[in-house]
Image 1 (cartoon, rainbow, N blue to C red):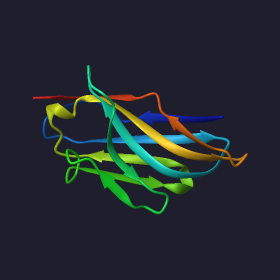
Image 2: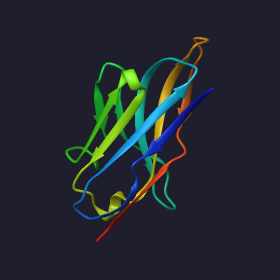
Image 3: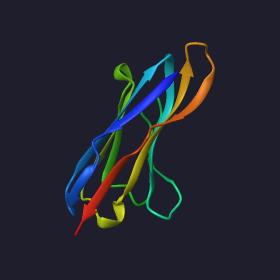
Length: 120
């Protein structure tokens, strides 16, 4: 019914930047909160940043001041601008969206993940 497709991951040197995008498509009436999570090898998936439909944001301590989450409601897309990247930011990044379907049911969807690798 709904797909989240991420893009923008890749290999970058420490101190560099990447911009992740996640576009939602399908039977969407509206989207409430959207978020980015990450999962490093052997570790649990953790929240990086979240954004409400009204644009209020929250960040993990590790992301605050370096990452910026934003969204384009007209395009059903959420972004994560990542600056001053560190090797410890290496992980698979997943977007997450609380979608209200055209049926008015509300469901959480996940993207397939995009890999970010930061080298020294």
